[in-house]
Amino acid sequence: MPDLIERLETEVLVDHGTFDLIDDSGDQHAGPDPASWLQAGRNMITVVSASTRHHVAAVTVEAWSAEPPPADGWGDPEEAKVLLDSGWLEINPLVDAEDADDITVGAAGAYRVRAYVTGRAELLASTPAPDVELRGVERYLLQFWPE
Image (cartoon, rainbow, N blue to C red; front, side, top):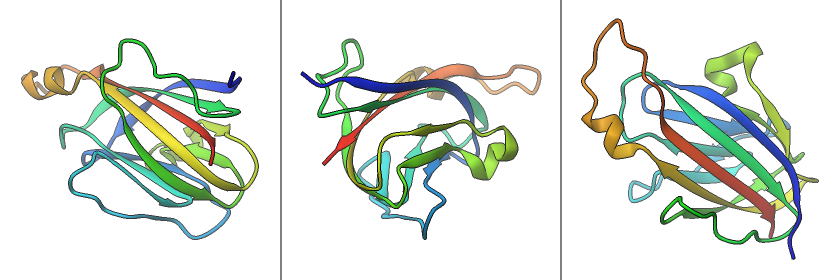
């Protein structure tokens, strides 16, 4: 039975339709895959939002000892492989800078990441208004475990 090692719940500003999780210990590259909203590579995971409008998404990141069971109530996930030079990830550091949260998913090495999202249709259906902040409409769960 896999163990949940660490869990982080945070909010991120989605800027120009994306947010990133970055291991700053080496070069970063997330291979673009136009068929997927989850893109991963070396030291970087890019999550592509349903909308290019600025909004605040709720993000939960989990580190597991082995592949976790499917998350209840989230629908179909996307999965990818990521290589991490340290295992320490900053959440959206290019936008949130000094306010970026972080999590250690484990030691340096290869990991699987499974990502779930809800609220994409609701976000697209929302009417933009300058005085209304879109917060928590789009929600993500990202689960990491050693490959």
